Length: 274
Ligand code: FPP
Image: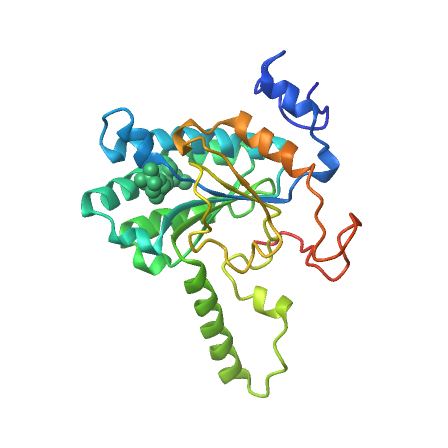
């Protein structure tokens, strides 16, 4: 049975595999933050003799499904890798379609995000996006800023190394202004990342069977559990997400120690503030 404290009414059919997975989840040990490398849109389209962009369009349905179940389960943060800095090198037509889909998503889904108390945030080099998209994204972020439910990060024009370099440059700027800096520690460094104030991902999911990190959240995934599925992103649904959580809860997270003890006090358990 769905956990009574969760808002899952109407979302999970009685007697379905999803309900069975849900019954295996310990809601006291949910991952606080799930990050997903959405991969396989191009292959999904090729298998159907469709243009690559048809795969991206179908991928939006999976995005909607995953955002909804994440919010209803009570996750704190969901981060989806939508467009990397390297993706700027794709054919112009594909880049334009992806940007168009993003705008369309935001326009269509903003009301749903609001209704579900979801805060939306872009992480990445927004300055490289067109002014029109930047404006729409900023409006979306501002409109949902006060929402206290799921924080939905979209990694857009994002690179993990670029994020670290951007953080270093901001630290250098601050220190040039403030003078006499104290030595830098990990907690201070993390406050300069795009994800400042958010818990690090506990669970990193990658679709389409590839075993790569692809320059995603390089700092933040230091202790994330990695879960890979052969399912291509456009076919990813609640069921896969629930399965990933069930499997995650069976993992023994040791943080470099020997037994399965509770997480040590020194590791970040930051409150979400962004
Ligand atoms: C990877 O598949 C997927 C992407 C580069 C884009 C993902 C974007 C979306 C699903 C749409 C926009 C997202 C949001 C959050 C509204 P690929 O093209 O690399 O696939 P392949 O490896 O099979 O070629």
